[in-house]
Length: 254
Image 1 (cartoon, helix red, strand yellow):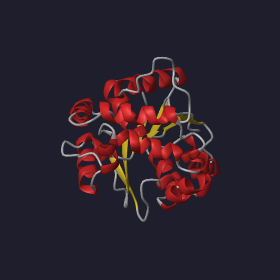
Image 2 (image 1 turned 45 degrees about the horizontal axis):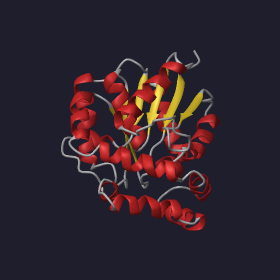
Image 3 (image 1 turned 90 degrees about the vertical axis):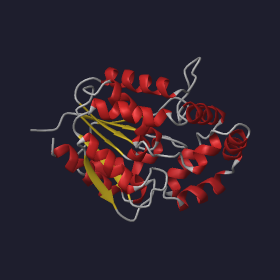
Image 4 (image 1 turned 30 degrees about the vertical axis):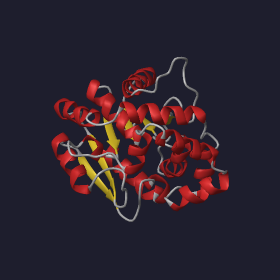
């Protein structure tokens, strides 16, 4: 019987839906066609009027978007997209058929925001950081982020949407989600116990907490785990074929 569930992907920061391009190509090669990429407001799409870019607003945006899609949904989140996924399935644990997300360390009670996040959370320092990213020339951006794992084509596509709106949303979101916000979200997530989860662990992802922390989160949630070796934060760009098979195996196991 054909899998009719819609595959919904949510990206993070500083990103656009372009990060999924290599993975989507591999998924289609495996016969997966029912794919939707959702871009959080300000991250590759325009903000709605009055958008405050708070964590709760992003949670509610995602819940509303999933309701609009309707039917069975397999939800996948990366980076802050994972954060939005965790928030949405905490509030509505039965809204999706399954979920898969990296950055599960965000939900661990001992998680400490990485250095860049702490910079964005710091007044004046954060403003300087996002202004520098917006002003960065395309070639420098491509060189910097392709060295971190994005392909050059993906980095170039992402840079086209690095603008003042994204800068505003970065600062507002990270400052709103300063600890203990994430730890408290983790507590609520552990109580909600959303079903059919997969915690994605990229070997060299330094933003997401330690492997031990991610495994602890997966254990609490009774979620499966998938380890991708030799890749960093942008695993979907570095090993898209491996990632596609990993997700397909997860969906086929439901």
